[in-house]
Image 1 (cartoon, rainbow, N blue to C red):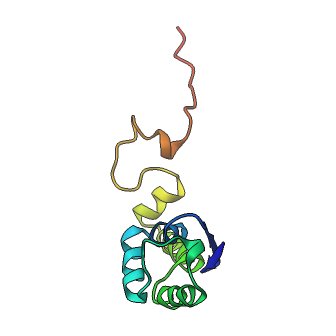
Image 2: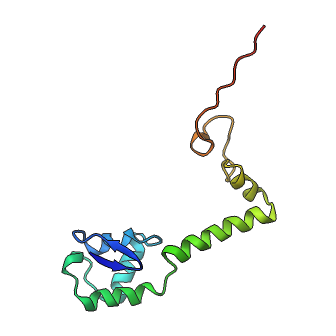
Image 3: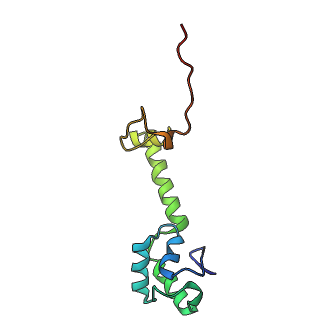
Length: 121
């Protein structure tokens, strides 16, 4: 199993797909990396040579991936919460951030229903 950017990528998949296991790399970016590094996207990870793996590592250095990207996203959310803007407050309260309705249809963000007893006479 090849280890690239601190991630064990699966051996039996094509290199193009295996690179998407790295956080911050989708299929489009994986194709870009492979063309820049000159590695054939159709070969399997187990068939990669050491030189190819090294080429991929150097090509990946140009992108923000894995821990750095997670940290960057976390800091962006923390900044929004610290300045107290609407988006930050919505993130803090675990509510939809982009203007969606919450009277109905916000179950994913709000969690399971909390049943309230009906009004008694």
